[in-house]
Image (tube, rainbow, N blue to C red):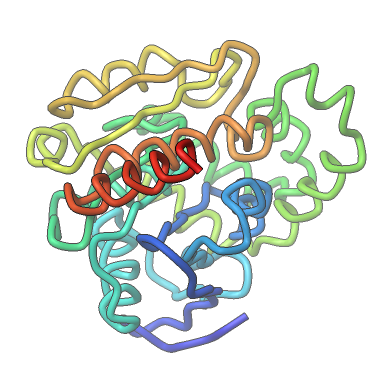
Length: 279
């Protein structure tokens, strides 16, 4: 784990240099960067990757004032600029997907492609997030975790992966109420409808058919707003496809990288395949 104060807040991140474009991951509300570990394993040890904890989550700093999606997008932009990374494949789930949308609209020079999981131009109503903030303050995340986990994971996954569910419940409950609620405020106030039309990067949107937080129809709506975006629906998966279906998510990333490769790279890859076939 690496640490750097950027945009007036401490950010915790992991950066692994390797081959090809860097794949950057932004996590969901209440989670940390570990939710991408299985996807990264599927991509292979040679892949260049960057994960980080959102402000107020994991090992990153919290900051007192309520957050906005614009602020959270700037956190990631400053991190990418600090590391000198350009033309990344940016993957975000839930609020991380909203951050990815905002980054792509603000700084298209940074983005080679987008993979947006379980996200939308707007997630939930003002009332939903006001109620969540009030419940966290009055009851605590420990007492709300069961309901949150039921939106994160399908019933099948919970039945077959009890230890993993217990671990991710502990991850959720380790969040401070302040950091969690500040991110809820960002979701409460965010409407990225105007952003979608400004996104020019190739994009894949992934929806979970069992998602109890962001309905698959909202993900389909997002895909329809982004020019040329592809929609993938995983019928048996809930809100965190990166944990329930890491192979499918990794496959979408790999396909997007291949489809967006420079022409000369594709030609070189084709020649290598032909040489291998011919012996």
